[in-house]
Amino acid sequence: MKEILSISSTQLKRIVALKEKIEKLQSQLQAAVGSAPVGKAAPKRRRMSAAARKKISAAAKARWAKVKGTAKAAPKKRTMSLAARRKIAAAARARWAKVRAAKKAK
Image 1 (cartoon, rainbow, N blue to C red):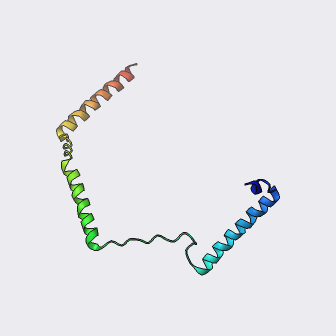
Image 2 (image 1 turned 135 degrees about the horizontal axis):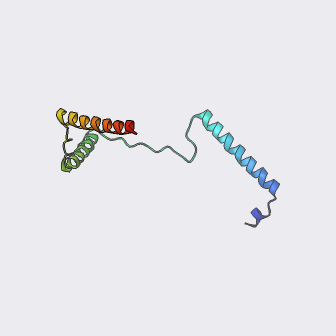
Image 3 (image 1 turned 60 degrees about the vertical axis):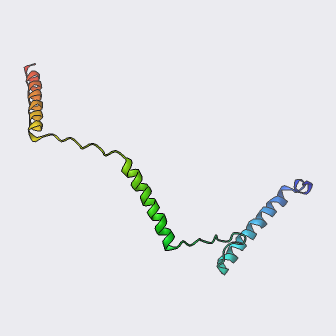
C-alpha cells in the first residue's frame, strides 16, 4: 500500500498509458486471431428438444386460455337507430336556428 502512495503523478500517468496500450494491443491480437476475449468464454447455449418446446408451448397456450376464459365478455356496444339519429340531428338544427335567430334579432 505504501508503494502506491509513494508513486508520483507522472509515474501514475505513465502506468495508465501503458495499461491502455496493453489493452489496445490485446484487443488487436484477439481481432487478428478471431477468438473470444481471454477469461470471458462465451456461455454455451443450451439446446432444447422439439418435444420440450412443444410441451412448453402447450402449457403457455393452456395458461392463456385459462386467463382469457375467466375474463368477462365485454358488453355489446349499443347502437342508435337511424330514426333516433335523425331526431337528434333535427333537434340540434332547431337549437342552432334558434341561436341564429336570437343573434339576428340583436
